[in-house]
Image (cartoon, rainbow over all chains, first blue to last red; front, side, top):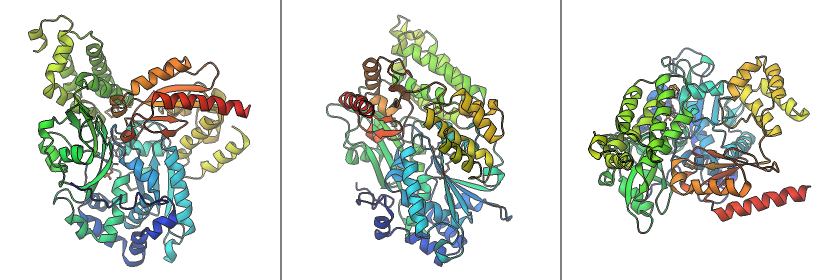
Length: 426
Length: 160
Ligand SMILES: Cc1cc2nc3c(=O)[nH]c(=O)nc-3n(C[C@H](O)[C@H](O)[C@H](O)COP(=O)(O)O)c2cc1C
Ligand code: SF4
Ligand code: FES
């Protein structure tokens, strides 16, 4: 199964991070076309027609999100979510570090479309190198008139401000991101109101993922209808998948949605499991989604098929485990992450992730107690659907599926401590 | 803050549509200069921002890249995210701790190195990953780390 490169079409061209090479490869034609030949509404219509869905994890239709902005004359903002902290996900990183102008062009074109004069790119604090690269890209683009007070002589104003976070996974959640961008602790806001009506500085705001905004460039170039022909009806276009873990050729692979199965991605593109090993399971959408066992690897990579298979496409971060990996140890590692990243605002997530971590650590260190499986399930029930933001559910998605798919491993962790096996398994 | 940073901090106060947004960028300036956020600088920042020191503390304590204790000249952050964990990150961290004689999160006696284990650094395809002063080192081995330590020590020696 071949890759289908739209976003990554020119990524291997030497010097593509600079504006001259980027332009030579056709860069900034979409922005030029948008501001010179199209009205903002025309651009929104193309994005609607393209069926593009948000690439940050939730898969919400981008054109529809843009259409929620109230037409009341208030200042609007575009915020690009470059927080990328979902374990297993490293696609935005590659866009930011290797093709910064593609992101910048996507941001400028989208800002024009939603009639925002000011866009922000929020980067996680660890993307300091990306911050510097994007800073250079902005300076180069400004010198060529792609942003500033008079974009390409049209009299339009487009400004882009970079903002560097300071280390906190929850700041990827859009309202927590806005809090952080306003200089506060990154704790999620109550929704509604949604950012579209009350976002950055309480003004109408669109928050989109890096890959989403980058995809606007090929959409404007080829037209929404052409883009919609790629992928499936419900899941249009191409998507970047980050493959990592126990696999021979880890990397970011761009494929048409729904045209490639998880197994084809892992075996044909990513080279299969390391020599002498077999795949045990994969988490296909970043660490916040349920595991898939190898007998489901024939599932096509699109939003609907993944959901039917009992998991989610999420961010497209595929973490793969081979036969050497312990599911209990993996579950512990993930729970440590969510416990550490819980913002502490609501009790079920703050306390629940801590207790789950403690129970899992007992199992891994050989102190598993009789009844610990019930403890895990009880704690998960108190989190499931009970938390202020989706991080709580994210924390238990993989664990819940692990307990279903690999129950025996948890049981033997506890049974190793001389507890009667049949009691533990209850 | 040194004069240059103070100048930059004052510029940041009006660089965003809302003044409150300047706090995190200003804290980055402090962290860059001192390797942590010293007590007296919290007051400087609070004064600049027109907020209480408690407010500044509340914000900075939320973010893992702001330190309350001095850090070494080289901040080595070993990713322990799941992908790196599956690719031997624990061994790398253990190696650094032993080699430099530091505890988790600790700083070596010569003040050169701080070693932290951090969550996913968004370069999972190149696991295991380490950042040194926020610069990526992809697919690192113990040998790479050994070389890195030697280079850092040498670099410092040359400067002296
Ligand atoms: C805990 C949590 C973490 C998230 N992290 C990210 C992230 O790092 N990057 C991102 O684009 N979206 C992230 N999201 C999703 C955002 O809230 C939001 O849906 C997204 O940025 C919208 O952009 P899109 O429609 O283009 O996907 C996260 C959500 C949650 C609940
Ligand atoms: S679910 Fe967790 S991260 Fe979300 S608001 Fe509650 S404590 Fe914070
Ligand atoms: S898990 Fe180490 S970079 Fe993502």
